[in-house]
Structure formats: C-alpha cells, structure tokens
Image (cartoon, rainbow, N blue to C red; front, top):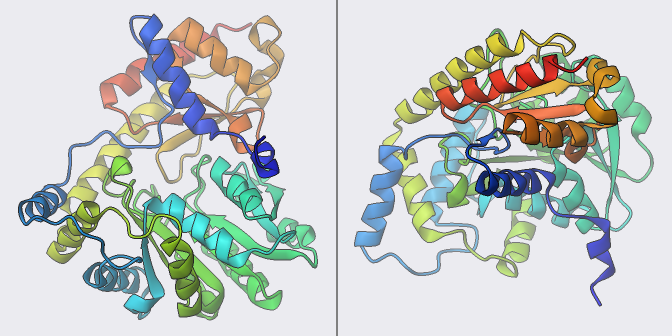
Length: 394
C-alpha cells in the first residue's frame, strides 16, 4: 500500500508529453517534438573545459552540502550583479537543478494546510510541490489579462492561511513577462500581508521586444527579506541534463535548506559544479548571447508561421522559449467532437506528426504549449504542419 500523499499528485504533464512524443516516434517515420522545455545547442566551451579539467584532476568527492564555497561565492557575485544588491555566499544554495531549489523552498516554508498563490496557467511542478509539502495551491486565473495576474485578483485570493506567492517571469507556459508595476504591487502586497515570494526567473535570459526582466528584489528592495530567488543553468546555458541550479534567500532560509538537502541529495553533481564555476569565473557570456539570438530568430520564424492560424490568436511570446496558444475560438471547430486541448494534442500527433503539450498540464484545458527551442528547420516544418491541420478543421 502506498502513502496517501501519492494519490494527491501525478507524474509531470510535460514529462508525459515528452514520453508520448518518443513513443510516437517509434511507430511512425517522423515526429516533430515541440514538447521539451530545453534548447537545442552544443555545450558552451567554458562548461566543456571546466568539466574535462575536473575529470582530469580526479574530482570525485563530496563537496559541502550546498555546493563548493568557490561556486557559492561566484553565484553570489552573479546574483549581486543581476539584482544590483550585495549577496553573500551564506545566502546561496547550489541545488540539483532549479526544480530542487523550488522543492527546498516549499519544504522549508510551508506547514500543513498553508496556502500558496499560483497564477494560472502554471508550470505543473509548482502546484505538485506545494501539495507534497502539505500545502494547498490556490490558483489565480490570468487568461483574461494576457497571462499576467491582476493584483486585485491575487488580493482577493488571500486568506489567513496564505503563506506565499509564486512569481514566475518570464512565465512557463505562457511566455508572459511581468511588468514593473505588477511586480511592485506583488512585492508590496507580500510585505503588507507578511507573505513569502518564491521568485522563479529561470527564463530571465530570454526576453523580447520592448519587454524587460525585473528581479522583484530590485523593484522593491524591502521585499528581499521575504523572497527566495530560484534560477539555474538548464535554460541559460542549455544544460537541462546536467541538473545544476541555485537559490538565493535570507541566511536563515539557506540554513534550513542545508539541513533539508543534507537528507535528500546532499551536494549537487560535483562535475557540474566545477563546470559552472569555470564558466562563471571566465565571465564569458558569448554562449548565452548566442542562445538568446538563436531563440529570438526561432521565435520570429514561429510567429510568422502561426500568424496564419485562422481561429487562434497569435501568441505574444514575450519571453521564455514557448508559444502558448489559446484554443478557445477553435473549440466550435474541434475535430471529431474533441472537448479539450488533450484531444487537440492527440489529433496533432496522429494527423500532423507534431507533439505538443496540452494546457491541461498547466490548469488550462484550452491552452497549447509549443517549444521553439528545437532546430529552426524542424520548428518550421512542425509549425507549418500544425497550422495546416488546425486550419483544416471546419
């Protein structure tokens, strides 16, 4: 008999979509996979050299639970530069990917029954981790406001049990970038109501047009004492498989994270630590810049193709690596009595050989997420097929 908590969450919806794409690829000639939250890229030379040097030097031992001191100092310098504030190594924890940083945050902040505000549509792991920690996710719908939460809607969702607000900008899956005024209002609300802010900025490197990424602690410095910043290198350096992330938070939070992490993973992968340290010490941003230009180009290709959709509004894609489609206007034309985005995903895979992620994974049964982190030629082929199929529905 399994623990009762296992019935309160399922496998990641995005992971399930990737698995479905792989399975379909085995049974047909070609599948264009638009499900993965990762970027097609070679390794950054600095990462490669740092890892190889560590291996050649025989690095294979435990480090400090929260990562090597040299790495935490380098991360503190990075966060200081990014936020315009001074951070110290004892306010930094290196983690096994940003997902563990988020898990650590929920586990050290939440008591059973505590509520966490999560704007919707949301990355599926946000809510699952709150539940695992014994908390209750409270969703605030953003679909009517270009996927950016209204502060009055957040305020209306607060109760005496509210403990934290999740802020994810640029947002997964919607690609929305929170503006300065919205972040100011959220920060002030957190201060006034004695709430924590879990600030996920994993897609901060990828913002387009006139939009800009603003760390919430830079917008309102007073919110720093109640903010946990979560970031990593899976997106900015295309290192999803290396599992290396970090959090920045008040020292008492980091001390609690140390105790927790000592009983879960202990230190992050030591070779990944050395690789990222070499990159940070080199202060060479050419690879990040290359990735940002690559994604900006792919975004333009995709927006041009998706503009041909007849019933579906063009996605905004202000930041991140996804196009997020609102299928509401397509619903009367759904093929074969389809009712939700799940059915659209099934049809796209069968009829177009295109794998996408249904919005049901993100709390939105009429949304569709498409990654543009894949090679441009595959992206063009996949989106063209998708448009042809969806426009063919009468």
